Amino acid sequence: MNIKYKLDKIIYQVSFCRNTEKQNISKEIEKLKSDKNILLIYDNKISKKIVEQVFDDLKFSGCKIFTLKSKGDKKNKNEKFLFQIIDFLIREKFTKKSIIISLGGGVVGDVSALASSLYLRGLIYFYVPSTITSIVDSCIGGKTAINYKGITNSVGTYYHPKNVFILEDIFQNIPNREFNAGIAEVIKCGVIDNKKILNFLIINKDKIFKRDYKTIVNLCKKTLQSKIKFFKKDIHENKKRLFLNFGHTFAHAIEMATEINFKKDFIRHGEAVGLGMLSEIYYENRSKGKIFNLVKNLLEIYNLPTKLDISKIKINKTELLNTIYKNLFLDKKKIDKYPRYISIKKIGFPKVKEIKDFDFINDTILNVLF
Ligand SMILES: NC(=O)c1ccc[n+]([C@@H]2O[C@H](COP(=O)([O-])OP(=O)(O)OC[C@H]3O[C@@H](n4cnc5c(N)ncnc54)[C@H](O)[C@@H]3O)[C@@H](O)[C@H]2O)c1
Image (cartoon, rainbow, N blue to C red):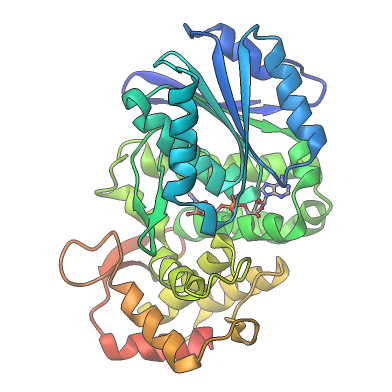
């Protein structure tokens, strides 16, 4: 059960690996000309059983395997983690033909991919995503990054994992919060691309909650195929790929504003994307309407926040409003002085627009987030 796509004449592959299929990763390694050195970078919250499963698979490749235990969570998406990886590669004399395999969520994945692209200007990179956000979104498209100077994803490159392996066991092991947070990116693809994804989320909610393998794989495939359509011919985000940022202008502003206190776990990326989508729909239409209610309903079904619960962090409401406002202007899609956002007037018909009505930013924050 694989998805293949071609970029610049190179074929990339996402494999859904059943427990019964063994040595999926080592079989792909054998097809490459590598120097037989592997660095496995894994998230410390992943169950021991899964880490061992990957390790056992890699042993069949006959390679020398090094491991690096690391931490997920946005506060670790930084230069310290990046250089920890690079220092390791230098110390162990890795070459351009060595392999990095990351096993983790979007944070471990984004930083490992950035290190893979920077060290000797690029070595071989594979990814085993371990959260729904990373399975349906960050495992493809090639965006790598760290957060630097308080700015989300301010330093990064484009570098694609040659192979992505989605393990059957991972789905049963993802904590509920990580599971739900990833559904926000699925809703995003449904809104910008295909109402069928939204209907699928509604009709199959019980099976999805039970983590029925076939249903979830079907959902992941629909979402990945939708994402591929948007980035395949626009890697550097000049046209169609921009639509994948629906909800992200506000989401990143929220994430940056609530991270100042370094309150770990306050908001997951996917949770912020949910709030960001509501904010952008509200800003576009100057009111809550049919699409707003559809997205809000889906967020509620999947236990995702539809308001910012600031009682959990020590921050004054006005201060938070002002910081979110200010952060919107750090938008990376900005090409002029105005931040850009994705406007949705009809499901499946996104447009890129600028945020020019500054007064309505405050209205949006007050009416949607608080
Ligand atoms: N590159 C891209 O295209 C892209 C797309 C979407 C998101 N992102 C980035 O991804 C990050 C968010 O991803 P995320 O939500 O996966 O965050 P994450 O990697 O921080 O994972 C969330 C939490 O789950 C834990 N975790 C991961 N896998 C686990 C498992 N199997 N079992 C138990 N715990 C597990 C992590 O330690 C962390 O505490 C953000 O930094 C965002 O910018 C990148």
